Image 1 (cartoon, one colour):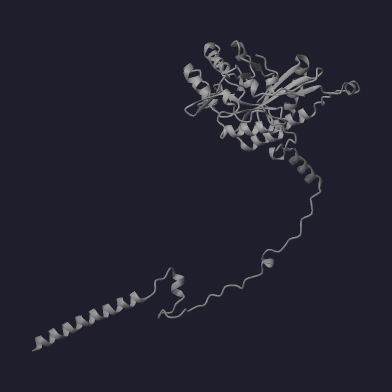
Image 2 (cartoon, rainbow, N blue to C red; image 1 turned 180 degrees about the vertical axis):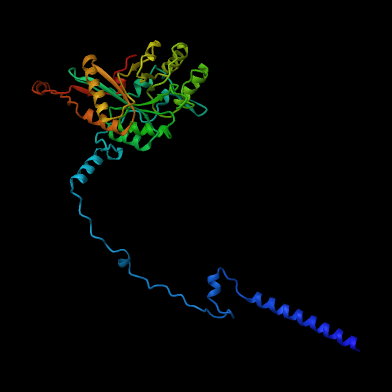
Length: 379
């Protein structure tokens, strides 16, 4: 009998324990989940009502939060005036005024008679009746007999859109423009330049002299590559579905020990009906000749020492060369300070006067006439 009582008590205790455990976990499960300790503090132990009330500040009027401050008076101290004058001297291309005179060229788009297409590759060619791109895509500028011809090429365009647009829109239309073969949307940039009135060309890149620090890239000519590879790179540089009148040779290594390689490049350019401009600033390239190629060597190359004083000195030198030789060719990199200097220099030229009587009574201070580069190239 005693054994049955003990068995009953143990069973009752077990049942009570199980029931208590179930009640505890059921209560815990019914509690809300808190995202943080702050949420838990907000509720009392029974989890029914908030234990604290949080009050946000009243919304303030916008005028009080952002009061209109009085305008500061302009600082007219000598130091402030000097600082402003210094900032005004900084040559920013965004401040260059646009050229009001525009003279769109005859060919904005490529002439199919001067373009050869093969599997999506567009290359210049001589036309059916012997027409050549450097002549057909150029324009002739009439110059008075008592004026000297000045031709300016801005090269290396297309890599900086702001500088490129400034050169196209701000420089006089007779300034010729040459674009890097690495330019994005090269055809669109060339067409935009021609719609203003600029003759258009493409840079030919030579191997870098400082090849350990700088590389002119996969479209540059190479002294280690085969002639076929260099010609292939030349064609890739000219693969533009837009009017290109020739190539502007940039500063670099000219392999004088193997002139045949360069002669093959010159032959390829001549066979396409293009001109060649030597802007290397050295005499190595002009020693390598090829009959029948229209070419010209730049008299002044501005690709270093970009201070306004140095640039102005080079342009004064160009004036003397023009007076001595009848013409001068200046090739310059598109640095903002260069664009400013070229624009100011050209604007200082004396205007040409067509009336003979007026010419007799007019003192011509700078008898210089800006002409496109095709006007001073001889085949």
